[in-house]
Image: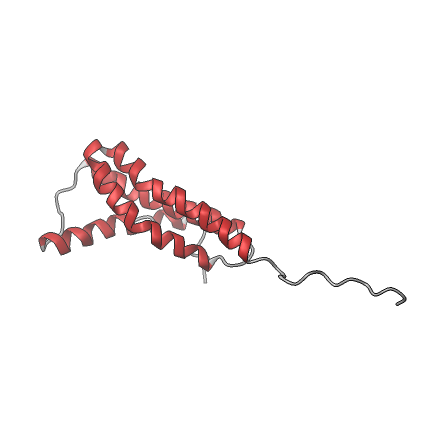
Length: 131
């Protein structure tokens, strides 16, 4: 069994973002978007970079790696709306506004998970005098 959370797998997992946009197009218009423009190339890049960011912060955590997926899912709809609005500015706007929610949510989630998942919440035992 392979490790599906390594950085090379981020290339494959990153295409989820393009599939999310295809799903939105399908729900909104009733068909898939078969006209592919150069601006659409920014969508897999956003997905790949967001998954690499997720894996980077997950690798730094000792405990609670799965909890980091929660801020990732919270940032996802904000990222989709940011990329939709940023698309009016071209591919660079789509990249910037699509990645900002992940750049904000994942470090905050990492910090919160690291803060609240300490190894022990009890004070360390102290030696009793005379023993």
